[in-house]
Length: 135
Image 1: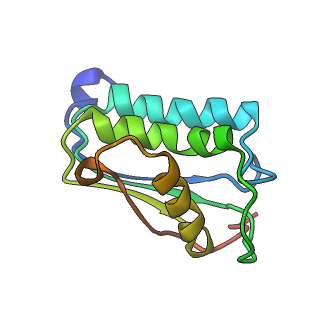
Image 2: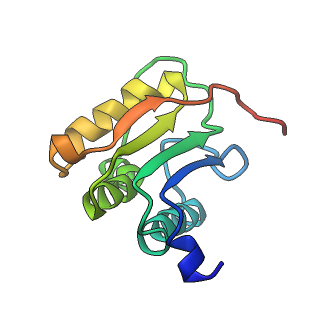
């Protein structure tokens, strides 16, 4: 799409369904990490006028409620793109949606690792619970 057309986009809703490419959350393998970072690079660099974004991550495996054994670099791999996007501009709305059962886990990750000032931070919200979705 031509850059002048991309510049007209100010509001966007994006959903990635990671059911087939993400086997063992919260661990991020190298193929998924590359895809994930590229999606956020496009949002950061190509869609610079977007000020209203809901980014949904669907297809995470069922979470039984027992605590997840996070590895510190996996925590940062998940939220680093969120942090970069939040810091990149002044947002009207920046929401990251994850399945309901995963919200507390990701809230903990954000609390432990976020470097973005709280008033500039993205909001974690409840997203789609459907898993798998149409596969």
